[in-house]
Each structure stands twice: as C-alpha cells, then as structure tokens.
Image (cartoon, one colour):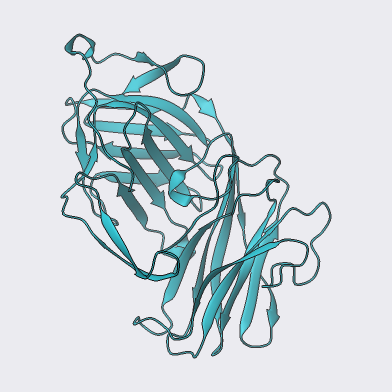
Length: 327
C-alpha cells in the first residue's frame, strides 16, 4: 500500500473556489474543490484535477460501500483519485462487469496502512493474507489527480467524503482520454481441459491495457491453471492465438495450483490482469484456463487506455512493468 502523509495548506488558501494546481505535468491546471458530497460527471473517459481543503474519510467497505455510488451504462466503469503533492493517498472505485458480479468494488489508502503477508513467499505467492487496523479510507488534504474510465456512455459517480466542507460540488472532466473496452469471447478448446479466450482490436499507442475475466473451475481438480497472452498482430491472429503457447505473442502464467483452494466447488473466480510491459503497445488480449475436470468460461473484457492509467490494475505503461491481481 502506498505511504500516507500529511500536507498542510496555509489558512489563507482555505476558500471554496477553484485554485490553480501544479501537478507533474508542465502546464497549470485548474483544480476543482471537493465538498462533503462530490458528484463526478463524465460522458467519456478522461481526467481532472481536484483539491481537498481538509482531510476526508470514506467507508472501507469493499462492496456495498455507502460512500461511493456509480450509475450509468457500461461494462466496466472505474474512477481513481491519486494524490499529487507528495503523499501516497488514493481512492479507487470499480463497477465490475455483470459477468463478474456487477458490484462496485472500493479500495483506498488508510492510516495506518494495510499490511500483507504472502504464502509461501513473496516470490511465489499462492495466497495473500492482509490485516488492517484502520477504520476508514483516508484522503489527506491536498491536490489529487482524477482518472475516469467509461464504456462509451455517460456515468455519474457520487462520493460522500466525511470531514470536508458541508455542501455539494460537481466535477467535470478537464481532459479527454482515448479508451476502448472489448468483449473477450471464448475461442478454441484444447481437449476437455483447456479453454481459450481473447480479442484483437485496433487501438494505437496504449499506455495501459488490462483484462478482467471470470471462469468456473473445480476446486477438487488435480490441477488448475491459467495463462495470459498478449499480442501485437498486424494481421488476423493465427489459430489458437491465445492458447498457453501464444504463437507469435508473449505469454505468462496467471496462476497454477496442484490442488484447489478451500472454496465452494464451481464458484466463479474473477481475475484482473495487467499486461506486462513491453516495447510495443498490445492490441490483442486473451489467455486460457485449464482444469483437469473441465473449466467453464463465464466472460471477459479487455480494456485499452491512452494518455493516463489506473494504478489499481497495473499493467502496460511506458514507465512500469505489469502486475496481476486475483479477486
């Protein structure tokens, strides 16, 4: 979890008007003030600068969070607030696709921060256990960069931030970001134990790409696993393009277990996977699931974003390597 810190604003500046922020980008940008109830409206993917004049807290509930509400159409909708003036404070809200449950998942920085232990080790973690003594997500006063991902339809996000000036504020996006969401359909099967999925799209110069996929696996199978396949094809992908071999692309393992976890047999597992960094932005995302007792593919969506990124999903960028997160 990113470090939290306290940044003080001179009392003379504590007025409820838009101010000029100086983020890492070179030009001056107007920062919109957030209040106790802040509504973010977006007709497309984009970004904006926001300022908090006081420390704010939100509920830590990962789902059914009373302080975060997302409405509007689209498969995957997400927002992310990241502090820009030296702290590590952040807030992410993701409304998952219907095939992945359709719930809004919320995460963010806390004080003290969450601590996690990987088993059996950080180099080969099959299970992660986390503990958090904090009681709320904390956003300290300061300047924040907002990124909103939409699926081509207007969305509204209402944040209730306790501790801010009473009243309501509205935030509109200041910059448009190119984005694309594409369904990752089931493709070829390899025998009865392996299914593949994926899609090839036309999207130039992505700065981030990630996929969210869901499958039903048998927890008592002798072996289960999965792979991620990333492609940069200039023509139609070949047969079995998204198989574990990933011919002509780049393949990596998502997970592999020789015995299933202690979970309900046949439950839907959802995996969010950021694309590993490479020298070329990918236009093909997919992979495979393997289950010796027979897997069932539930659904998948691939996301491409240009000009910014959502840190929650990790993945492809010009400055960082990829990450993967299982939910």
